[in-house]
Each structure stands twice: as structure tokens, then as C-alpha cells.
Length: 632
Ligand code: F1P
Image (cartoon, rainbow, N blue to C red; front, side, top):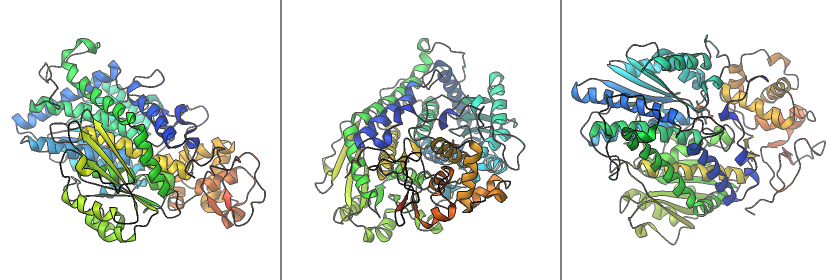
């Protein structure tokens, strides 16, 4: 646990640009996210950012090394593999990127060699399952399996907070293998990486990552890619800027390597590298290095994509408002429909809602044309695991379409590159347009493509974002995907804010499903109740075990608190009340503890609260803002 003397990780700090995001209207929310996302390219707090020469140098060396490994596969028929691995969103971005890069290899007649790992296996691609993130030996075991029979493995372990034991276990394994290159990607200084003890393991993340950092100074088999991009707009929500930065960095490195291997430009306007990939050089002034310019141009394409998205802030805000008008209803839902990687991004966006905002599994859903078929995932069709895993459009048609009401919002995600779009998507969209649901359209449009055929007057809101860059290698909608991720993150986050699930810029009803989230919950309780760390933890235990005297539980391992808490809703709101000292568990539990920031009321957790709470009322968590609810 980050004790008093320990500075917090950047990724767990509150972002000053979004501290009042809970009081903002839809456009104000999008503008604040624009400011926070700008830090992805601009950097933060005097640390090296993605455009810093130190980071560019590492990215370039990594791309040279990758290109050399890919070339060995081509020329010497070697079996070199590139493995991206992570937990939660990091694992999902690993999946989407490996899927895309393999398709590029295949398109040019090469054998796919990109792999991904995600803690908890493929089911974690769409349902958060954080407990396996705490398991370093399992991480190492998964890596050993995927490395079996390979000549060389480039292992890229992604943990935005430099905090996931699963990834630490993998780095610890890979850096001691002669046939592995170890790459750690995350967005904190290594000196601030997580140092909490890990149950049943003798090391901390920090010990492992510091060892890798030392190795990276002398060996070309170890890399640390850790630009600092500032705190998340919703504190700790690394699905947002962390996930976006991961996508940008993986694209920048690996698309550049693919360009070098294939001798084909990523974009028609791009020039190929001036040098052979094997020729490494120490570069400190990148403006002087012609060989670096294609990689830097690629980074600029992402940056211009970001700018283009936020030039459509008004449109994004209107979609957010439409989504929120449904989510704010008692049984409202937000459903994304799409095809290919754009559809898969809908699945990914919906996947983090349960642990971040404590919502039900059905409230945010994604569906993709063809379902799991062609999704490039290791375990294939997952629909047998249950309703949530039934993600095809046909399954949407049978499971969801008949139950749509006017409290539901269906958002159709389109790319403009296929003139007519997948036929099945069109058929289903027509049925949705004829249903009582509110329907929105979001089109990511390629420059010069007409989108008239997609527009339909029956959409309540239709937004078209014309992008300066769309595809990589003529087919993969890499930049459109990045743009879509930013927009969907804004919509789902904004809808939860307007529902009242965020206080300040804090997720106050997070699910306690792993050690990091347990630690984050204590920090939230400390911050808003004024309790010290020990009292905040005690209040949390009282809320988990529903006992006023939780002394008996104090000495249990954290994993057993997590097992107890992970299926419970509203644990942190209840703990906040208890830490305030005015309520007892028995009293609080009688009421409906509502994790709702009553946007229109105006009491404060530390301010005047009725005591006792009036029966039948929501237990007013009364983390309230004084601005009126902008939707009403
Ligand atoms: C991994 C992760 C996040 C998720 C939540 C739990 O974080 O699963 O994706 O949003 O915070 O942790 P990290 O290892 O990439 O920092």
C-alpha cells in the first residue's frame, strides 16, 4: 500500500484538468477529455512524454530490433514471435493490435507471428476479471506456453500503472531467458512502480521492473517504454489515456517495423526508412536523423487523428447526451453495433463499465458482425460461456432486439471505407431504427468517401468524423480505430458522469476485484471522508463484511477481502458513510445505499447530513455537486 511517505503513482493521481468534470454538461465533459488527452502527445509534469527524444530513441531501437526479427522469419525461415501481454484494457489492446498486425503480414504473404496474452484468458476480453492480474506465476506460465518452440520471443508486457503482478511475473521470466527480448510498457517512472507485497511471491513489481531498467542500460534485449502522459481523466481509469497511449505506441513501433519488412509505406504519403534496419545508431537529436522521420510521421498521424476527433466535440457531445438520456433512465442501456475492429472496439469500451462504475452487465453492451468468427482471438467462439459472450449481430437480434424500449440507446458504429458496409449490419440497423430505441449513428469517414448512403432521418443523432488518416497499409483501419476509441471512451464515461457515478473526477463505486483496486478504494475513502489510511481500511472492511466490529477480519490476507468483496455492489459508498463515523453497518444496510452523486442537491459527505437518514430515502452518499443536472 502506498503509505504516507510514498508518492502516488502518476496514473493514480487526480488530473487537475478534470477535477470538476462531474459538474460539466456534455460539451464541457468532452472539452475536459480533450485537454486530458492532449497530455498523451504533449507530456506531463516535466517527465519525458511520447515525443521526447529519449522515448523516441527507445521506440526507434525497438522497431529496428523487431524488423530484424521479422526479417529472420522471412529470410531464414525462423520462428520468431512477438507477444503482447497485459491485464484488462492492456490485454484487450494487445489483442486488437496483434490481430491487426497479423492481418497485415498475411495480406503481404507472410506468416502471422504476433500473439497476445490477457490475464484470465479470452473471457477477460469482454468481461473484467481482475483477480488473475495478481498472479505472477500464472503470468510466467502463460508466457512459457506461448513461447514453446519459438526461436526468439519479443515479449511486450503492458501495465499502464506499472502495477500488474501478472506482467511482473512475465518480465521476471523473460529477462532471464537467452532467447527472449523483454519490453515493459507503462506510464509511470519505474521508481514509482507498484511496490506492494504480492501474496505467495517473493518480489514486488518494482523490484522486477528496476532490474529490467538496469538491464536496459547495457543490453539490447531489455527495453522500458514509459512515457508519462499525465493522470487519467477519471482517476485511475487506465482504460482511457493508458489504453489510448498503448495503442499509439504499439502502432508507432510495430507498424514502422512492418513498413521496413514489407518495403511498403504505411500510408501512401509516407516515405520508407532511409537505412537498413540492422544498422543501429545512437541518436539524440532526432530532427537530424532521416531514418527516424517515418516513425515520427506515424506518431504525428495519431496526433492529428486526436485533433480531428476533438474538432468534432459538438457532435461527440450530442452522442454523449443521447446515450446519457437513456443511461439516466432506471433500466436504460447503451448498445454498440459495428463490424470488424470498429465493432470490436465497442466490445472493449463496454467491458470496463462493471468494475469502474458498478453497473450491471447488461447496461453497456457491444455486438460485432460475425461475432467471434474472424476476431483473431485465441480461444475462438466464446458464446458458450453465457449471454454476455453472445456478441454477434444475430445474437443481438435474438437476445436483445425484441426487448428494446425507449429507454435504450443503440449506437451504430460505421466506417465509411466499405461503400455499403457489411450487409448484415444494415439489415439489423434497419430493424433497430424501426424499434422504440433511440438510435445514434457514428461514422468514421475516410477523406473523399461519400457517406450519404449511411445517413437516415430516423437517427436521433448522426455524427460524421472525417479523418485525415484512416487505414494503415490500405486496409487496416488503425487511425479510424484510434479515433473511435477516443469517442466511445468519451460517450461511456460521460454517460456515467451524468448518471451521477463520478464525484469530482473519482469513480466512487468501483468494484474491489483485485489488490490494486482495493488499494485505490482506500485512497478514495481517505480522500473524501478525511479518515487516515488505517481508519479508511477499517471502514472498508466493515462495509465488506457488513459488521460494525471488523477487528476479526483485519489480519486476513487481502485476497480474502477481495474474494468477499468482488461480487458486492456499493461497498465503497457504504464505507464512505462508515468512515464519516455517523452511521452503523446495520443502519446503513437497511437503506438503499445509492452510489449516486445527487447532481442537483448540494450536501457534502463532510457537510450537513440528516442524521439519522430518513427511511425510504436513498442513503444519500451526498457526494454532491451544486450544479443542476444538465440533462433535465
Ligand atoms: C490493468 C487493469 C485496467 C483496468 C483496472 C484494473 O491495469 O485491468 O485495465 O482498468 O484498472 O487494472 P494496468 O496493469 O494496465 O495498469
